[in-house]
Image (tube, rainbow, N blue to C red; front, side, top):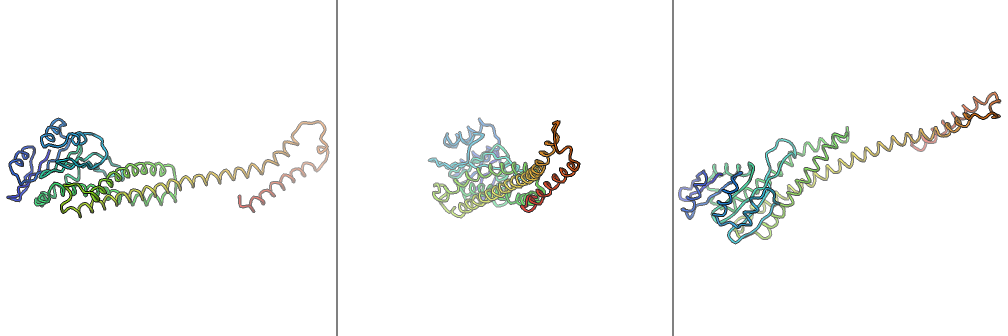
Length: 321
């Protein structure tokens, strides 16, 4: 648990733990940010209930899985976002809930894994303590904006790999590339679903901002909306490109298979009359007039050769060979 208490008199920020909550209550003009990282659930519940937060909001915040949303209560606003674990591989990430309570003079964030967005905001406040004077709602939007910028950055970092996949797919298509594309499509589908959730939050903030977000936060809300919109459009674009690549690979595979089948069919058709003649004269009947005719062997061979050549010429003219 990390707490940041801003004292308006000294214009300084103190970093500490639960002890700063008592100091905040004694200073009517102070602002505090409480960040809970995988804290003991019982203690979390005690802390959240002591701050007069709604039971339903607390219940949602303590869940391991819950879709992002924004909800207004009489005394506070509740946002649930989905943060991202740090990752070094393209689109290889895991989401986890980031719960945010916005109340007068207090911001509470809760997450079960390390949040890069929370670390970024803490470092930013350490450099410029007066950021706390902007209020809990502004700090919450800064968290949300940075989170969505990470979404955009991950997608932009993935673009070179997607371009190389496109080149490899058309130059040397193989099953390994198709397997990778299918996996990436699955990750992007998961990514798109989360951006869709966040877009609903951004639209709600933009069109009907809750009470805590109405004063002087228009630009921050618009910026949040733009970042969500950009991440959603990029995810949709990349998903469509990968879908085209997989469809193209399947189409090329089908085309190659059709060419192979065409060649095999041509060979089969050529040998059908030859097989018929060979079978006809391979029958063991006692009386076959052609057997006593001296040039029969050469005539039959000649007929078979002419039949094969004529069919080859015909197939060539039709473009089947």
